[in-house]
Length: 348
Figure 1 (cartoon, rainbow, N blue to C red):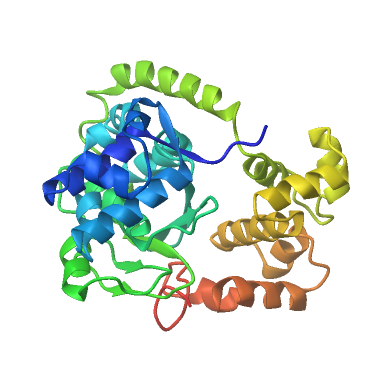
Figure 2 (spheres, rainbow, N blue to C red; figure 1 turned 120 degrees about the vertical axis):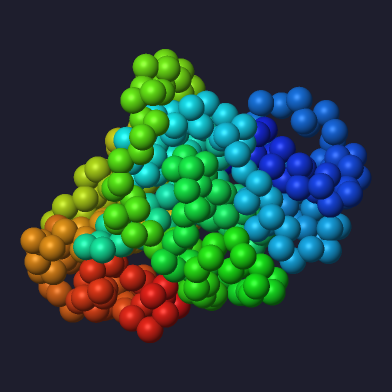
């Protein structure tokens, strides 16, 4: 059985909590979103449930900054067991790695990618929506929550160098600047934060204090992750399989079907039900690996292209232009950080 992406109830409460702060009671918001109140007793929600909740709560509040405000109020309780592991991280970069590893426990409706540069690194958020398109408030809440988390992890007023969103501006620019304390761009290729490496790699003093307790929590979180993975969506499983087998000869759909114990026809049909294709997943895997490998200065562009299954540089350049709006060489040259576009530092 193929399951839709899901979110934890702690993240559901992030939405409802902000709605309550704005004078909306749970019953009103749930009814308007066509969600039964007894759904609050579930362990996790389908991703489309919370998308409807975000849309409805933002509409009823009539507040264009709803997502930003919800995200800034995210604290350890919103991240459940993951918050305990974060408090033992040796650096902020390590903490972000913890979020990457255990993010599915909070929500598997998206994932983070870290793109390191010489002076700064991008933390890019890739949403994985269900049948319903994500509300911009969902994306804004995620990035605001990351900034909020970095501040309570480090006990310092952290600010990114740059923030970019793939959607259009929703509320007044002053609201974004108040949350991020950084330049913000919209309608870009990706949604993400550009963070200074000195900030990411500075030792955190509380790491040793929580280390022993964090081991216990990490064992529990790993067990929860394994349990959740048993119901992983087919496209997520296949995306991981493609990435692990990427090389000069990319893995084929026939090989993927055989690895999953399915016929090619069945694989294609199931991927179609998830609104994707094998070609889409292969393309996304190539993009993610290209972005990662361009952060390695010793890797030549020809080697990267060859390792991703491009026989020549020209088709790799065309694909990279389509992915990011810039060339691989331009990406690499940008001031020591893998920015998404040479003009906006995000991309379009």
